[in-house]
Length: 137
Image (cartoon, rainbow, N blue to C red):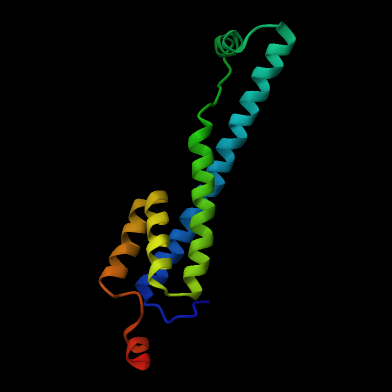
């Protein structure tokens, strides 16, 4: 699975970040689905009753409908989760400094603990296992 002989701690961190990124992608996709359904409901109410958007929102909320908004956060979250998944897949095969730095930064933006732990492993030189370091030097 891993081309480089990473330490167990690095493998755990990469797998944790991958699972978290996939979970975030599923969550943000679900939120996007809810927002799209709310928009369709508002547009249908506007067409049926011939009212403006604000009136339609107020009428739907008064009738008990739960409407979801805030598309900017969802779009950023989906894009960031996809970027983290792609970067973690590249990181699995390559150990270049710039790739590790960008991957750790993206994971920090998505999940502070996982990204901070990648930075910790990178700066303390614990990415690779000890036996791999001695074999290659």
